[in-house]
Image (cartoon, rainbow, N blue to C red; front, side, top):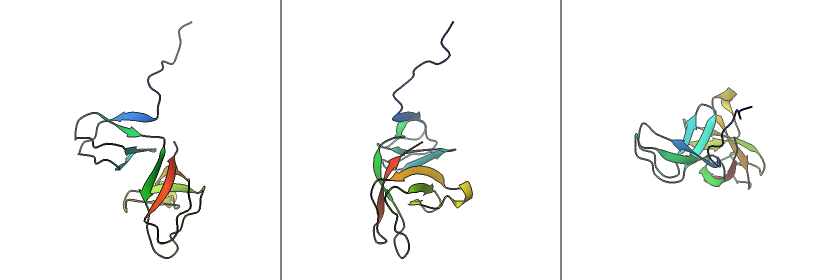
Length: 114
């Protein structure tokens, strides 16, 4: 009997070919898959996005924007911030917070999860 699956790669990063330049640190959303570019990727050239690991990502600041440790956070592509609001599925799951972030914090530490 022949194997039905073939190992391709470790999976902590996946190939990605953007249609426009991507800067290091940009959050990339492909359907339900969310990753982060660890290095810049030029348009139409193959690069890689991390789909696991721990990253500090932008979050909104101001009253009622604190995020507790262990919370699910979603990527709000419209505002380019992590949020606890999935916006009825419009914001895609980014991961879980590894540290709490206060109202005044501009970033939140997130463990990516797919």
